[in-house]
Amino acid sequence: MPKTPQISLARQLRVLVVARLLVVTAIVAPWFLVLIGGPPAGSNFLANLTGQIYREANAAGVQAILIFAFVATVSYALLLQSRKLSLQAQAFLQLAGDLILVSGLVYTFGGIQSPFSMLYPVVIVLAAFHLGQRATATAFATAAFALYTGLLMLIYTGGHWPPTVGSVAPEVTLRLAYNILVALVGFYGVALLGSTLARRTQLAEEELKEQRERVAYLRVVYQDIIQSILSGLITTDLEGRIVSVNQSGQRILEQTAGQLVGGSILSTELVDEVTWDRLRSQCGDQGKGRNETSIRRGERTLIIGFSLSWLKDAEGTPHGYILVFQDLTETRKLQEELRVRDRMAAVGELAAGIAHEIGNPLAAISGSAQMLAGTLAADESAAKLLNIILKESRRLDRTIKGFLRFAGPRERRPVRCDVGQLISEHFALLKNSDEVAPQHLLELDLEPEADLLVADPDHLSQIFWNLARNALRAMPDGGTLSVRGGQEGDLYRLVFQDTGRGMSEEERAKIFQPFQSSFDRGTGIGMAIVYRIVEGYGGRLRVASEPGLGTTVTVELPILPTELPTMELSAHP
Image 1 (cartoon, rainbow, N blue to C red):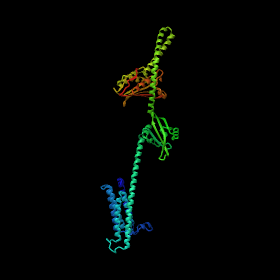
Image 2: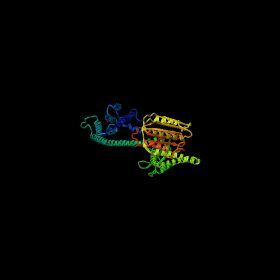
Image 3: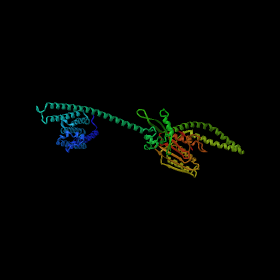
Image 4: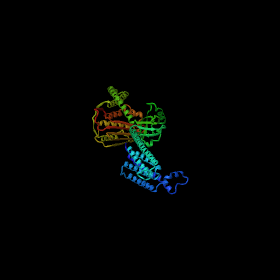
């Protein structure tokens, strides 16, 4: 059978040292009461306690018991402190000493009539529990039987050993045999029952320990799972008070558990009171608990998807709610990018066909108008109309060429570009161009990145000029245009930020579509061209804008791409 765990056994031995001293003190204390004159009058309890066994007790025996108990207690305590002996050996030593101590108590206080003989079974049971083996309990039962039998023989024979014929009366012999038989059956019976009970207790403790360890392990595993999932998870009671929130939930909501736990679910801004009541009423309906909402966190707007379900106990009784939520902001952006990409591909094919179909008739119209202008020069009214035709023809021609640049592929000419130098040169040209008014403030912040980006310089120029001109047009009354660039991991990030009029959500959704210009003289081709260029390099183009707060356009291009498409759009200014 497995041994008692060392920490538990050491604690039990310390308790045994203290308990032994208290028991001896409780047994010997009444003797001192008798010695100083007996118990107070009228105290039947003390009178019975300090009866015949205490009045006949030998002082020398009492002193020996006290000395033995004191010396044993100090010795046991020192051994426990020093750990020179194993705990099993110390337990054996203490219990063996207890048998001797009990024998002294029985002999000194009452002999055959001593009530303290019942302490023998106590020691046997302690041996069974502390030493944990049936053989050990049987050995202690044998030792207790031998000591108690020796005391009985010594007392019954009056100290004459071995007894002679006629020295012991027959009825005394019979009583002695009876007491020995009772002790034999009692001690060994206690040893058997004690060891069996100790074994079952030990097995139960080990099983309980295994179950506790299993429960603790599962609790840790479940907690790790909850804390490791990327989705946010909030549990509440039936009233909607937050009970717990995992790490992902704290990250998404940008609040700590201390700020959330104990508060209302409404404080998270994920739901309002009406939505919360509706979700709770739909908890039992599959597929009806999924919702989306948007929350503000600083300058960012997060799109959050969430669902609500019951939190049930082992019996299936609901005692709260589980709110699982995810940040869908990036997912929605990617979905929108895919939709824009598909739409742009279709528009590009359509634009190429339309441009070619319109281009030839337009050239004929323009040529005919020029010839008529020469023949009708004298007619002022006709000449004026013809000039309008020529002007609009040229404008339409520019639009068609823009369409062709947008949709028409050509081989790209990638080289290793010093992006910082290229952007700096274009920025200097922009500052000195007619498009910059005195009320415009231009700022440039570039990290030096030489020969890192592999791209066609013409494409980078198109990106710069289209985004810069759009930013200036968005600030007709003045404002600040900030251009920032630098490496972010394996990307080169170029940011154009203006303080112009901004765009509505509807305008942002159409910004990359041709002919969707927000400006009076714009063709609506520039942003579409920028999008196709960035997409062709495997990069990303993101736009953040709100009415009255300006617009931020972020271009991300991969540095040193391993593969480049062989065909790309024409992007000449």
